[in-house]
Length: 135
Ligand code: SF4
Ligand code: SF4
Image 1 (cartoon, rainbow, N blue to C red):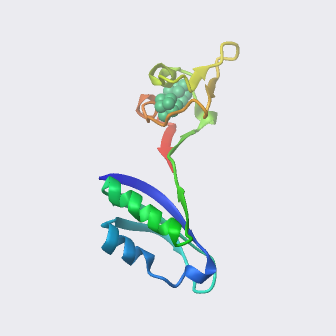
Image 2 (image 1 turned 135 degrees about the vertical axis):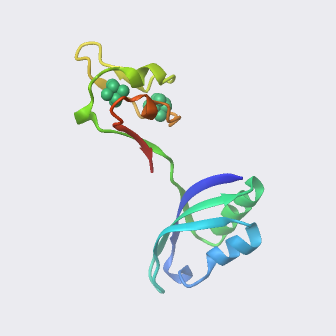
């Protein structure tokens, strides 16, 4: 099984169709609706968690795109409460891609989002729990 958190954007002429029913019936998607903002005749938005087999997940995504629905894959992100950081460096020791480093002059924590692979190892390494992995 694969897991995705998706945002679906519906154009106004599609908001009255029951796409989640199709996805469950035809592609065996298990869907948890996190947030919905849909009203008939207006643009709609649906935030969902999906679990499905790899091929079924791809087929369901292709179906949505073919139907004219804009699908965005939400990626996890790292959030750091820098103002509370003790600059202990513990998180940098577990960050293999080097996204977290201590500034050699100021000894402040630096975070380079481009290097981060969102492995999540830094969160439990922080002794004061100021690193969160979320959406
Ligand atoms: S999530 Fe992984 S790669 Fe990203 S900053 Fe934390 S340890 Fe480094
Ligand atoms: S482990 Fe926590 S307190 Fe230490 S440098 Fe990293 S973010 Fe700051």
